[in-house]
Every structure is written in structure tokens, then in C-alpha cells.
Image (cartoon, rainbow over all chains, first blue to last red; front, top):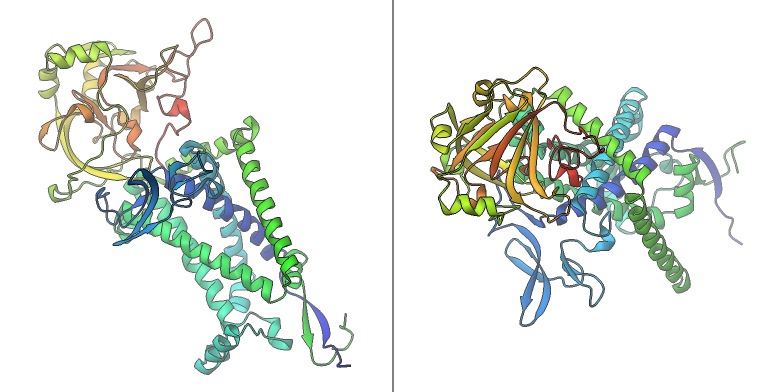
Length: 279
Length: 264
């Protein structure tokens, strides 16, 4: 019988990481779903300062084809029949015109006022939580020690190796599992330093009150409709990240990963039991 | 992952998802939770007021930026008797009433409004629904008009009473109205527009007179203005405990849940 590799419990996540992670899960899910409710009030996107109603780059609407209503989504020049999901959805016989379906929005029924209330409440949680994370990450060294790739990790040969083993769903073991691998570091940095801050800045740029005070911010995004489009695209990137993140959490050891994000303890497999530490 | 386990996980996911959704709907309609969400609104307003310069001008655009498809929202053609009669006569009998907490109540014809100090601006109109259109507006500056009527010291807000009924209600609170504070009223870009894109203001955009209060969302830009009233508070109640102004939130849409300050 082959000997099972020994398991060592290490302290993976500090209490601040764990707390901010789960608060972020709550805030981002509610922001996402209330955001889709807000999007549904005008399910079309444009570039520049103003809406060009006849020519959105993305739209979801009900179109009568023959006698039957269809949900039609257009992206650029492409046109998709998305009946039941985008544009025209709901239970058979109770279908209605709406961008995203009711299972994706908060509240599930159509209410821009309620959507906005949820959105702007949890935006505060999201921003305050993010600031706590960043402050602690910078002062406590989490960003420098755990998030920034080391020189060795940045070697092209190492990056290539990581990409190949990742694609094979083989994950680092032993000592290598004590730290984030280089792909994790790049991804997490992109999310915490680029995508999530961009979400906040494009959100602020849609506020007409804020525009008058900080006019250069909205110019960065090419105008208010550009800011709305980038807010939407960035939301899509966040969703893509969450999907990949959750899948990788599952395939690389669901319970071990979950435990590490709840209790902080993470089991790594080592060749030989480390002295005194073996669990 | 075995098929049973996958089925089990999918079942769990669907169950949790629908629980989550119905929980969110329940919370939305729970007065305590809704009250908590609304508290953040006050925080947002105060935070915005703290970081923004209340005198800052909204961005102005060039004639080339003007939308050819400026969208009209809300009432597009008031059916209210008073308005229909005025429109039939091309607003020759129209008089803008300025009253409330003022020393000298005014009644101004369109000709008088047109000869008052004016301002022309090309600005972006942001609807709460998410779309934006750019238009050129010319109108009488609100500040000098209020000076002419001379506000009493107790006056804190300016209320705009409109001709259109947007929702049929038994108590008359379905008539459109809006209100702004004095800082916004005296902002140089706050005008009573009678021209849009170098032509007389069209009916669908609020003829004969609409408010332009740039830096706020579209619903603040009251159309079909008949009367301007200076008041001390927005939620005052009469002897019977009924709110005097609509439902007491300072505007048709604020009465229905939208933010009064409309800056986000």
C-alpha cells in the first residue's frame, strides 16, 4: 500500500482577509444583481457622452418576429435570439420584456427605485470593505509579501510552466503550496488593483453631481455612456473571475480551500511529515 | 464527481438561489430593512455634498454634440384641461405665477420671461434610467427672477408646480411637481427654459417652460411649469395631518422612492 503524503496544517489567511473576503462576497453579489435591475431600466449601451438610441453597441429587447415575441440581443453587428433569458423572459404565459431575467435581478420584479437603493447601500459596504482590505494589505504587508510576484516567479520559464500545469489542473504541492502561484498573484492583483477600483470609478462617473466636481474622471471613460458601458464590461469581468475562481476552488480541494477562508487553516501535502507539525 | 453528487449540488444550488431571491424580495418589502437601505441614501447625499463644490458648473458641450434624438420622458402631452386650453391659444394666456414666501408675488407672461435675464447652455441630460441626451437650452435665469419676487427669510426651497398629471390618484398627488434648495435655485445654470435647440420648446419637452437644473437627474427637470412657490419645508402638514406638498418628499418621483437630491 502506497503511503499517503503527510498533511501539514498551515495558517493560510489572516482574519482580515477572511472577513473582507466574505463581506465582499455579500456586497458583490448584491451589487451585481441590483446592478442588473438598474441596467434593465434601459437595457442598451453606448459609447461617448450621449446615447445614440438607434445604434447601441449592446441591446436586449423584445422583437416581434412573425406573430411571436422574441428576446433579441445585439452585440456590435451580431444578433442573437435569446428568448427566455435576455430581452423576453419569464414563465411561459407570463413572459415580459426585460433585459436580464428575474432570477438575476434584485428585486426579482421590476423596480428601479428598489434596485438603486440596494445598489447604493451595498456600494458603501463594498467601498469601505475594500478600503479596509487595501489599508491593511499595504500596512500589514499582505500585498507586498503575498500578492506581488517574486523575481523567480516572474521568469518566463516559470510562468510558462505554471500556465501548462494550470491547464492540466495540476496544482502546486508541498512548499510551493504555501504561497500563491504566479497566475493567482496576477489574477488577484488585476482584480483588487484594476477591475474593482474601475468598478467604483465608472460608477462614480455616472453621477451627474460628481461629474461637475471632477470632470476629468468622466473624460477618462469617454463620457457618461462610455462610463456606463465600461461599468457593465467590468461587471462581466468580475463575473468571469468569480466563475473561474469558484471552479478552481472546487477542483483544487473544495473543503480545504473553504476551511482556509473560514478558519484560516489550510492543509498542504509534504513529502515527509514535518517535525512536530504533522496533523 | 459522481452523477448523484453533481445532481445533489445542482439541486442545492437551485434551492439556495431561489431562497436567496425570495429573501431579497421579502427584505425589499420589509419596512425596517427598507429603512436601513434608505439610510444609506442620506449618507450618500451628505458625502456627495461634502466632496463636491455646490457652485461648480455642469459640463457644457459644443453645438456639434447636440443629440438629434433627444428622448422625451414622463408626460409627453398633458391632457389636463387647463393645459389643453392654454396650448390651443399657443400659450398667449399663459402666466407663470411666482408666489409663496415672497414679498412681491409675480405673474409673468412668456414675453416677459423672454425679456428677463437669460442664459444659453448646451448640457447633458441624464435620465435615472441610464440614458443621456445633449440639448441646447435657452431660458430665464431663476436667480434674478427670485430676486425680483424677493424671497422672505423663511424661504428654504423652491417648488415647481406643473400642468401635467402623470398618475391618476384620488388625492391629487399624481400631479407632477419638483423642488430644489436655494443653492441650486441660485446656481447660474438653473434656468426656466423656453427654447430648445434654437427653437420654441416643443410640447413633449415641456412647453411652454421647463426647469433646467444641471448636475441632477432628469426627473428634477420639471416640465410644463405653471407656478413657482417658495416654501420653508417640503414635508409640512396641514391641520388634518395631511402633507401640503404632494406626499411630503419634495417631488413626484421622490414621493415614489427616488432620491430628492438626484445627484447620483
